Image (tube, rainbow, N blue to C red; front, side, top):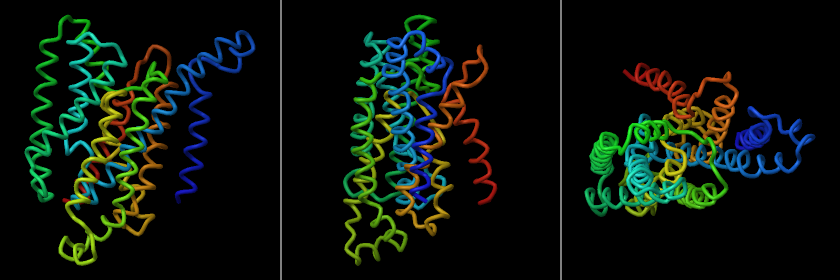
Amino acid sequence: MKAGLALLCLALALASLVLGPVDLAALWARDPDLARSLFIELRLPRTGLALAIGAGLGASGAAAQAFFRNPLASPDVLGPSSGAALGAVLAGYFLGAGVIGMAIGGLAGAGLSLLLLLALAGTGAAATRLVLAGVAVSMLLGVAINLSLSLAPSPFALYDLMFWLMGGLNDRSMTQLALAAPLILAGLFLLLRTAPSLDALTLGEEVAQSLGVGVVSVQWQVVLGIALATGAGVAVAGSIGFIGLIVPHLVRPFVGHRPGAAIAPAALAGAVLLTAADIAVRLVPAGLDLRLGVLTALIGAPFFLWLIMGRR
């Protein structure tokens, strides 16, 4: 399964580099320098971010569902997405930072949301208390984002802010890729390390501890991994929902429903899904500006409802 998903990632990455409103082959024949600049400055970072952010969201969703033992858990439950969004908003529209400053502000916001979560939940908190603390942090940060919207310095800033919050990879640069990718990879590394322990935790915490699993260590590796993988993505791309909820359910049947074993294929499947969605956004008819976050929500919301109805 992993090999098939990896090949699909490669195929979609090549398609993402080639497809778009501008025909690179035709442009290369007329103006090679412009075609090269378009490829390096726009297509390459956009494709890299789609792969990295999709992988981070997919793996984070699988880890969250495994650790909390809840099939409806998603990376948003701990608050890093809201923290990153608030940090980017404050940096961009109240401190006057540019796109790189917004990304740095988003990373700072994700880090602060993690610190707030740790302060509320405490060391060695149970999974239930972590969820409650994460919900409280997300609600608090959501209120702060709405307050920022209401205090936006101008109607144009408000419009730009709403547009950014919908999520997208338009006009992203190599600098933003260089900022986000290492943090997402660090988050993926932490989450993949916890995979065997998360499989053991399905037997219960006491049994897992008897098998040599450090439950507290696994807990904070999961929390930090999710914060890095999702916070860095939101910091540069805005809010892109439902990838972390959908993908684990798609891959888990192929790994014998082992939650830890689903993390690696979920990362690959997340990269596939987000890259495919980004290609679809680019190919919509001219004049329609469909945002990437809106498209993933259109796909994910019916799937979420189906999950709820199936478990009623």
